Image 1 (cartoon, rainbow, N blue to C red):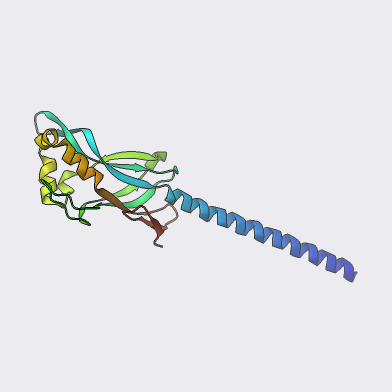
Image 2: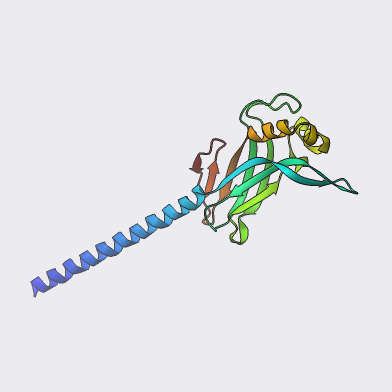
Length: 182
C-alpha cells in the first residue's frame, strides 16, 4: 500500500512538473511574441514627391515630408509619439542644429484595422524649426531646391515611444534601438 502511494505521489509530482514546465514555456513564448511584435515597429521620414497642398482655389503640387510606418504584426500600437530629430546639422536655407527636435506628432492608434503600414504627411504647422516650417510652406522651394528637401529627409531620424496592446511602453531611439520602458 505504501509503495502504491509513493508511486502515485511520484506520478502526481511528475505531472505537476510537466504542467508547470508547459505553463512556463507558454508564458515565455507569449512574452517573446509581445517583444517580437514591438520589435517589428519602425517609423522613418522620406521626401514626398507628390504632395498636394490646397491654397484655397487650386491644388499645387509640391514636395513635402512623409512619415512612413511599418509593423511586422497585425496588432495596433497606441499613443505613438513620433519625434523627428536631426542627426547632424543642416546648413543652408533651413538651418537645423544637430540633435534638434524639429517635429513631434502623437498618433492615438497606429496600425489600426490590421494595417501594418502607413504613410502620414507631416503637418507643416507643427514643425518646430521656424526656418524649416517656412521652407516647407512655400511650394516654390520644392521645385528650386529638391536636393535640399532630400537632404533634410536624409538627416532626420525618428524617436518613437508607444504602448503595445498589453500596456507595455516601448521606445525606439533615433539610432533604432528598442527598449522596454515599463
